[in-house]
Length: 248
Length: 241
Image (cartoon, rainbow over all chains, first blue to last red):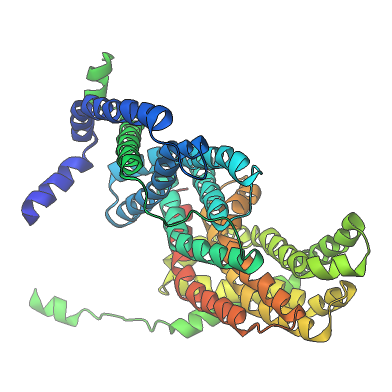
């Protein structure tokens, strides 16, 4: 078992193997995300039963919740890749970490925008300094910091290692930020509007779960696509890339 | 053959203790700071001026100033830390002493810790000493001023450490300044929240020990882990050149 894992790890460490394998995976992942997202979103946005108190405006959760979940998972993924970069100096982890950052930032941005669109009819304002909103905004800032650092350093390898340090520091800080923001918010406005923890209708729940799974597949496909571009640009001098793109 | 190996004398040089290494770095940095006093005073002037701008921008009503006072002082402290940290490793990087620090027998995090301590003594302590005057100018009362001092005392080392990580990551780059801000500002948020809320609680005569305890916990956490991050970051920045 361990030997098998080790072999798999070494295989994934090779850009060429990664490129071949993800090339085979990509169509399936894209198909899966289309298969999940199109029915999920159409049903969720069009036909799922309206919510008792919020009416139709709640439907934004079918985009909002998956985006929030992916934004957070993306940061964790980046930090884990960062640990792999610093400890084992794995080249592929550098490329994956670099590709995740802008995609995770986009999902954080989508989460904020959809949340604010939902907030206007429900809370009557575009923005509330609520703990959840604020911590998502800070997550977006952390992503932007990581991206800025990565863009500022020219040498790809040292950029990746510096970014790895930053994303690990950010990941350690993230729970602290989250809890302190929650603490700050409860101090300042005790009766903020909260999602009631009442049981969610199964029809809504399954639609939501479908959308979450679909968005995760989309996220995977986007990360793979972006990583493949990164592989080609970094390995452009190697013979297999030259052969692949038809330049000798 | 065997004789020659035996007769070879292996000279093991005494390596100074960790403590000695840290103190040496600290002493050197303090000496440099006192030789360039303007660099030392500038963050302080910045701190005072930013705070002086707030009444000019918002209005001189004591009630308003009293309300925003804690936040103003904390944000000014945060910005002046950010300003001073840009030059923290740059001089050493330019003249090559950072490379020597990397090659020294002492682990890098010990040296980084010494540097941070010197930096904090030189930039943050004057700021804490001036803060009571500014608190009075923002119409805070006696007890609140004391809590402001406590919170700054516990919080500014954390700020220094966090921004030092940013400075260490960007030391090899020409356009470091703004980048440090983008990297470090989101990480400051917990300190800002607990620092200001301690002062606010004190101004409402509420218990504030909890907030100060949280600041103390952040201080212990960063003192323990940040030197390692700074050391790693410095190694990456220097070896990538």
